[in-house]
Length: 91
Image (cartoon, rainbow, N blue to C red):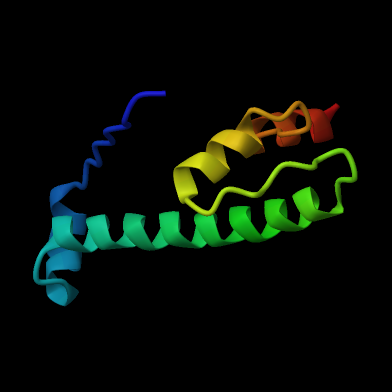
């Protein structure tokens, strides 16, 4: 999977509103995304550490770095991302 670039368009009115509170809109957006990534990682790590520890068939060590951990989990046959889980729940 390649790096993801996201562009956000904010109209003039919303820019004016945001500039009332923010010194730098782009900096705020960047920090908001970093915060969200951090929270998602914490939930991902907690959920899957528990699942791996409770899986009697999993006998390997749990990776200590983020990249290896995410690669291990997302390669598992029981891993489903949010879109897949939502689609299955919709039936």
